[in-house]
Amino acid sequence: MELKPGSRWKSAVCDAQMVVVRPPSGAGELQCGGAAVLPIDDAAAPTGAVSPDFAEGVAIGKRYIDEESGLEVLGAKAGKGSLAFDGRPLTLKGAKPLPASD
Image (cartoon, rainbow, N blue to C red; front, top):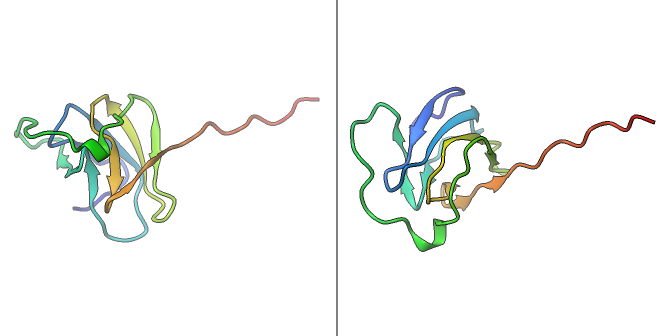
């Protein structure tokens, strides 16, 4: 799977969809709900169950990052499964602090 900036993906086990904002530094597998994601144009409907280890969910409009690889993903559609890269859970990216206006 080639994770290019702007590429769209969907979960194989829930309704989540995501867009790659920043690609990883190396090859790896983006996962949602414990299963590998599928290209957005794949006609397969979500099947199977979300893994309990990856069931925190994806929120629409939130960015998720993997510090180790540099991967950054934007949630485009909410779902029950949470994101991981090569089995490492992605973390929610916090907002940048605004500069002080003294």
